[in-house]
Amino acid sequence: MKRILYIISIVFIVSCNSTEEKKINQDLSTKNEIPAFAGIKPNRYNVAFLIMDGTFNTELTAPFDIFQHTIFRDGIKAMNVFTVANTDNAIVTFEGMRILPDYNYLADSLPKIDILVVPSAEHHLDTDLEDDLMINFVKKVDKEAQFVTSHCDGAFVLAKAGVLNNSVSTTFPSDIDKMRVMFP
Image (cartoon, rainbow, N blue to C red; front, side, top):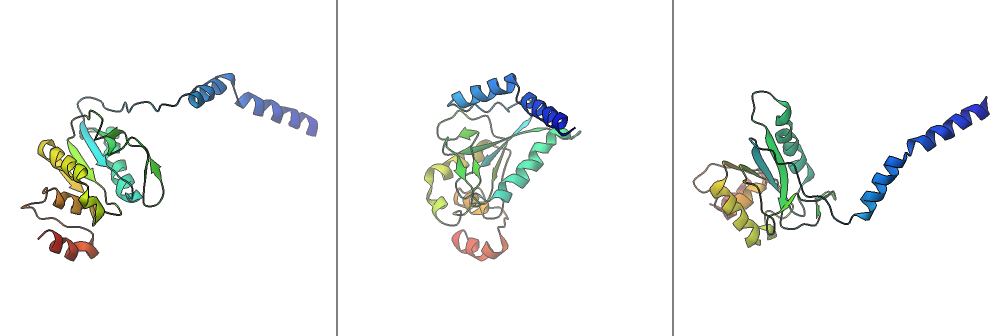
């Protein structure tokens, strides 16, 4: 009986590793290129998440999930959700997750952005504010997008870009005083 179970187990394990699966794995391992993002569908809002090294996981993943789930809801215009960064390389979040951006805003032709989301990142109160290319990208998108929003300290990036001029805004509670001083 043990011998029969052993033979059945071996047959099962071997059959799980099909030739088709081997071919797919070989094809993937021989390719050096990652396929281009193909998630833009017509008649949807385009929602871009601006990511960079030090982005906080939950500042990105929770709102990304909410916007993306519009495709499952009736009565709400569906949304194409994607990431943009200043690189084609993976960014590393504050918590260490590696995320490959869908678009490089310095090199790629971007789809029209209807909604720009700036999740909070580790250096939004200091060195990120000195990144003129990123700040200019936010300014440019603000002129064309329907909405520009941020989460927590992402508000500092929007303030630096002038997006919050003449607007009531807030940030992470412990950074409100710092924002008032930096952007009166």
